[in-house]
Image 1 (cartoon, rainbow, N blue to C red):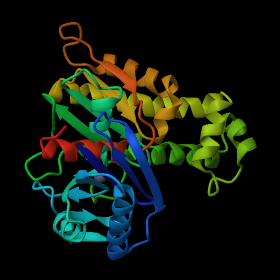
Image 2 (image 1 turned 120 degrees about the horizontal axis):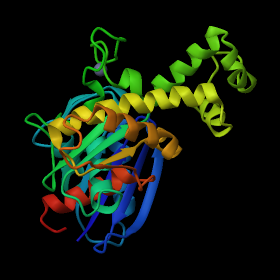
Image 3 (image 1 turned 180 degrees about the horizontal axis):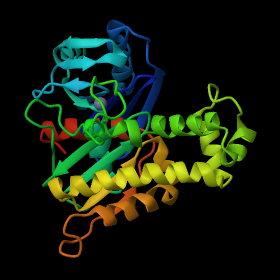
Length: 316
Ligand SMILES: [Zn+2]
């Protein structure tokens, strides 16, 4: 059966029509209506109706950047979408006349990677998404792991440094404060502010720490700037250390690194692998997993949501 997947992020809403042979038959994209849950719901409905034209669709998966309840029906908390306790499944099913399943966006993207990307062929996969924050998805024994209340796999908010930097979640020292794209940008800003001689290369790209952007940092990395590469390496070490700990807990066969920062490929992956091995408990006495970059760059969340919807309907 064909299914539709919609990925609702803070900046854009992306949708795909997934065919029976796993081909993307149609896709669509619009900017997320700012700060209005009602407008977002209307945009989802319009997108599904547009993608549906001329096709028989079994169901719809909707990936949301936020906490979804264990029944996959209610958006408990999605601050960037201005949603709190929204019964999204019921609302959308009523408007669309189709079966709808709600999923966390990182879970949906991880599922797409597991089914069609770097994780295919495995049964146990950990996805770590390194972007604005640090997100995660866990596939355990071929199943999506959601946890008891539906909000598991938030690895970005595991404590990494006791009493460390303040996090948006209200705690201190969370992993994403040290291992996200935002953390890398902040470290580069600190480098500029330091007036250290090693900041000379970065200063040529942008001298003002307040105006420094992610693409400036990317440019410095591409230019081989030693100081900025050192910051990236530090970020990789942090992630590798965290992954070694997660390995003790989850024992995955593969770790897939996704998100915006993963486009740096081995410049990010090599320090992750090095630190993973250096911190792996009982190293030498356990199989070592593979750490690879994500393969699905575009529409992973929407594709994963569409496939998960098919799975719920027993028609994958
Ligand atoms: Zn946190």
